[in-house]
Length: 109
Image (tube, rainbow, N blue to C red; front, top):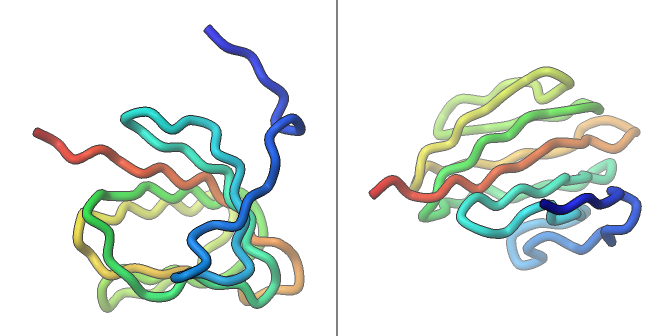
């Protein structure tokens, strides 16, 4: 068992080769990776594919999220599932931070 304060975890840049203006606090990094993610105004994760799936749960702010050819508004309460290998991206289109919980899902065996 482990207890932490979110304030004790530093914001780190997230994948600068594929993203800009995105910072994360890694909450868990075992089989399931969980990252509290903050997207600054104008920040974006460029369209890309990963060999693992994702679950994005948007907590605050507003932006866009795309999976394949489908794009929708990203805002509090929106949940997006990305399958392994699917093209996906998200961007902050507002003047406030876009905040989400990003889960990297382990591949099913």
